[in-house]
Image 1 (cartoon, rainbow, N blue to C red):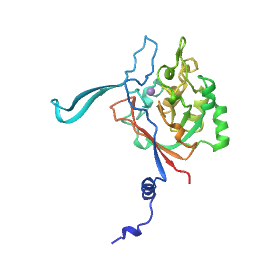
Image 2: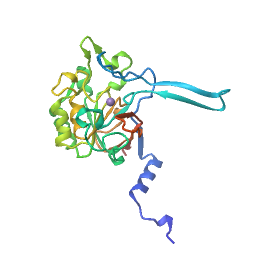
Image 3: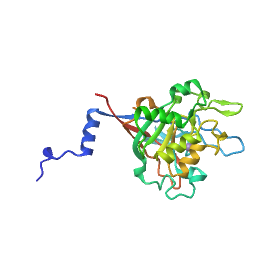
Image 4: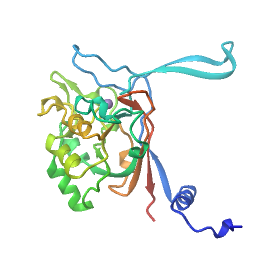
Length: 267
Ligand code: MN
């Protein structure tokens, strides 16, 4: 008979102890699903993504005396959400390219957070370029293959119209340049890329070659996207683990989801 108290330590056992003691903290990187939360607005000739809507089925009343529940509707790309490779034409013929078929191990990985808050505060159209990425790496080390990479801008603190930041010529928000996202996808072999804005691309991303380069290069290479992230200020530049599990929608191109990170508390 094995003695439980003398069991050899295991990685998962250590993790459980660290979670219980608070040595590892769970951070919520998700906005609340709410009808008021903005969704991307495309030019009027295109189809549009639906906002979140919720209706009461019953609330401990004649419609159901002991229970409360709701029906809800929304787009796959509403609120804090996940982009699968099938979302973009560059990824449409890849194997396992939809949320139901992506191998689940792809959802979990180490996360690097590139702080672009100063640049984004000075310029709504701030660009994540190779120069910005390499400057970050000089401080924190090269981005390991298989990492989630998040672009922190503090855009998540914006509310209402300031979030989409629409002007005469369309939305203005920060994002990666074609060279910036190609460095991450092709050279660093990242798992996925996430932003605090409504898309993985800049508001003016249509004007790059190719248009919407983050979508084009990420999904063309089978990589993942996250957007409308929250609380990135609570993450260290490196060392946290990010978990992003979309709903298992048959042939879904994306999904609202709860994104969490495991963060080691500083001693
Ligand atoms: Mn999306």
